[in-house]
Length: 159
Ligand SMILES: C[S@@+](CC[C@H](N)C(=O)[O-])C[C@H]1O[C@@H](n2cnc3c(N)ncnc32)[C@H](O)[C@@H]1O
Image (cartoon, rainbow, N blue to C red):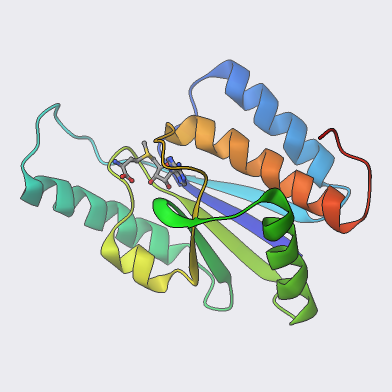
């Protein structure tokens, strides 16, 4: 299975980079995983609704150019569906069973994801009602995908 994570905005924090690298290394035993990091739109502190929409749309267009037409797309969104780790594992397992070999997760920038990206998404996944910074979200996602693979293989994992 090929897992792609598309993200908007730079990963700046060294401690997060180290954590992500560690899980990417562990994931290599199970699936091919790549991260596509796209630049965010520069934005002033205060923005009008229209300006916010324009920025999200620009970032969204950039995201959509990187989405493979055959990919099953999972957009990360606070208002998406919450799942347990076992349910996420089951989703990935079923997709593999149905022959979906490309899974793309999308993490938005500081303003979130555009309507067009949400329309392209096959599902929206929420990690809670809380807002996480996109850099931290990346680490949480790679750990949960790794956990999902361990669950599906019946391998031990710290509860
Ligand atoms: C800083 S957040 C954006 C917050 C923005 N106000 C919004 O409502 O989407 C950056 C990205 O991280 C992801 N994210 C943050 N918290 C999340 C959560 N609890 N569940 C799922 N995704 C989350 C989303 O992809 C979001 O676009």
